[in-house]
Length: 339
Image (tube, rainbow, N blue to C red; front, side):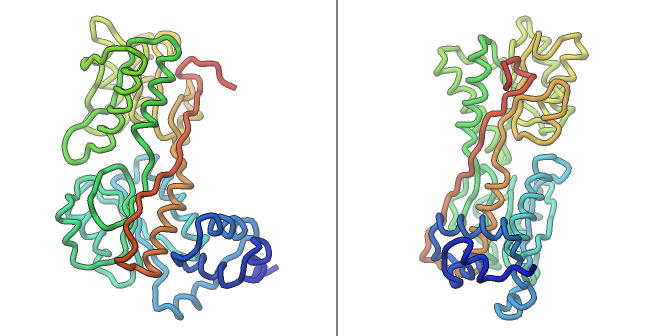
């Protein structure tokens, strides 16, 4: 059975024109109505006729998504969510990996030098604000991630400070007072790390636990080996931590390995929690307590915002800062009772 625009309109209880506006990413649709129409599109399996629409609008139907590292499970899973969200709007996504190279980030922000790109979703690491503001080609752009930019572009992110505060408070609630953090960074690419350090410190303050700088470990990257090295340094302290908050799940998995190498049990001897809720966190041994950003919502917010700008990139509409949700997923590695 072919699902028509009319079928979606009837299912959502709106006009055909409203459904058409949502599919085209038009700005003048309330968020509640947009959500209702998108649910109906998903439930009915409606797919717009891409070639007809693109011929009519003069657009290619191609979006670019640029992330620093596709080998990182979080970015791979986020890319899959963006592809799914864009497919529902009959758009194709071109994936680019920047490696955190500022020149590559700027090239992609400018639309890859190609008129075939309708818009760009970019997760920048080192691209500075002045370079981004002076990009020569004004292709519609939406930023992803936690770096702060004062630019007239939409920005989609999660509340990293609140999320870090929640996971640290969870570890403290289990009776641990020496709670360490793995993942601090310095420099231009450290916005996410700085926000998570801030949330960690706020949780300690609220619990009346003094902040000990020796328990905050810096890393050069968020990979397994970095987690192993940082955890070893913590375990070498005269008074090792009772619990560790790692700023992503790969760091946490590395920390679990380092503890096992010392003959320590997780969570018996040290509790460990991560961040991102990538697939491995559910199936590792022990399974990881972690913060789960709503990747599907991040993708939906980003794609919808970008299509809105593509449809009407009006300077009169102020840039939006859009927050996706997150939740704490408690599993075996923290030692708490799980459902």
